[in-house]
Image 1 (cartoon, rainbow, N blue to C red):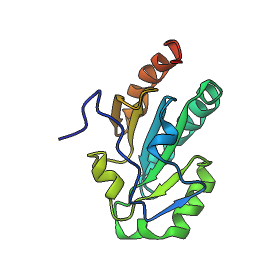
Image 2 (cartoon, helix red, strand yellow; image 1 turned 90 degrees about the horizontal axis):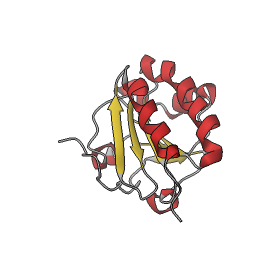
Image 3 (tube, rainbow, N blue to C red; image 1 turned 180 degrees about the vertical axis):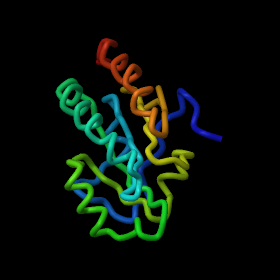
Length: 152
């Protein structure tokens, strides 16, 4: 069963390795956080990455944190050099977990790429979406996170 709205963010443990920087759930609490799952073999993931970069530029100064999780869908996706190459090519400079054993994926009860999970400042799930329309569905929920007054 997929995660429900209001579910606390799972721990980000069990990555095969972290590219760029490693992060933890505790470091993300206090800011709206977008966690996106992608794969090098997913053409929709590649097509949607400019929207994520745009959101980082637009909402990053307001506190948005973004974490990428690479979820391999096939054996060729396990090639770490290909993951690094595609991440660089797509401008993924946020913390990037390589989840070859699907440990993080299972914690998020996810089975899709692309998949997007938006958590509020308290670390509770506010919205989730997947597939080619997922990026469009998420935009309104993301904007609402910044219409609310910050906690504190």
